[in-house]
Length: 495
Ligand code: FAD
Image 1 (cartoon, rainbow, N blue to C red):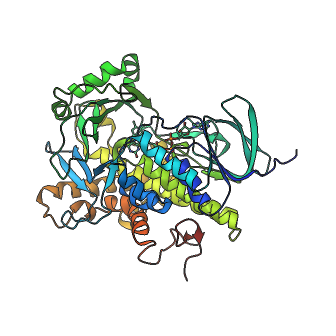
Image 2: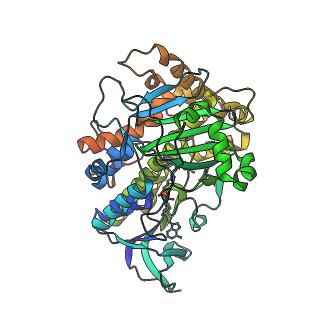
Image 3: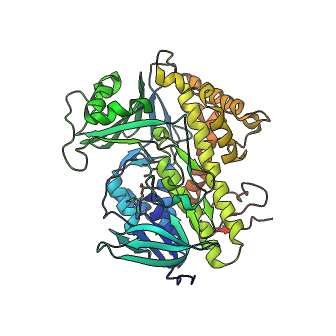
């Protein structure tokens, strides 16, 4: 059949953080990008707690860091946890040393409707042709590659558009991701359900931690408590998937009951009414979010953000993985469109780095769940390292291919289960040292597991802050590529 005309260099499906990032980063290199978004922004989304790498890394590279600073989002210096053997809350700060806070050691708590609109408006500003209220219904393909999309506008009329690359950034509800790498692989370990809503205020942790996310373990799971504004707090419960029926029968009642079961969070909300402004006046439910794919690209198409993978909400990694994945894909696409390096090699770089980052978070989050002890609780007993099933371990090893943990002491030659156990022990030791810490050094950074998970994020922050890495970047693997000076494409590493 005739190939569709190449109306665009790139078509991006979905205008969330992943889609807004990849589209802007490609348009910044002067290419023609169409972005198709089914909703009209601002639209609601969950995932309000960010990491510094998004704010100071990706947002800086895209040119929206100043706008973010002016938006009035609540600064977040770290996380506070009622989680682990000790009943007392502990915290981690994004600053390497609590006393020597550097200017990039914070993130924000964001109303996603506003944050996502800032990123999407920025994409439009740098030249992306953004079509809201339009839906992609399928892809155009031949044996060789993906060549475009089928989409419909507000009038319902179906159109076709051709492009060199299609990027699926349409989130967890993606319909087109099976065109790359088949089905999603779901995690058993992280197979939870969340029920969440909003209060019109609530107590705050003492300054300077008043912007921290607070996560508290309770019998049935854990709760997040995110200060979005003085008069708005996001509160969500994450519990075992087995609760799905009860939660879905009456989400608001289940949500209230779980808050009541957690003394710390219940205390913060004493006398505070539920929010009644839209879109915060509803209690919502999400489940089955933890999955990955055996492949993240094929000729003509790549997956980024939740369309590709997501681990778990506990460490606020979702928007980081989405924007980071978007940036990685843009580097490969910009490289291909410039025609300097072979397509397969450029996309292999995208895939290796993305899997590596996902793998680090996956490993760390297993360790993080393992930290909490509650022998009486079904939820917590099932979330020990020793409960990561064989099938999941095998799938996971295949996913990361030994990339997840660079440290030989953790990787070793042993099976993945031993490595995960070592990572969990290593992290637990660091948390146990917290009470005796002086305020110069954060013992969590003495944990290899903890340090690694923030390593790539820190490199991104450095790039945002200084316009490039302070040291010559080393490739992730032999024969690999490194980011260009502007952070928007891949180049050969210096010899
Ligand atoms: P999305 O934000 O979902 O954007 C996808 C876009 O694609 C949407 O705007 C949608 O309308 C559009 N779209 C869909 N289909 C089509 C189509 N056919 N055509 C055109 N457009 C389409 N992350 C954090 O960083 N911090 C947190 O605190 C956090 N908490 C979470 C709590 C829970 C319970 C869950 C489930 C997730 C949480 N996350 C969190 C994860 C976060 O929500 C996601 O990782 C993030 O939103 C992914 O961004 P995205 O751009 O990939 O997808």
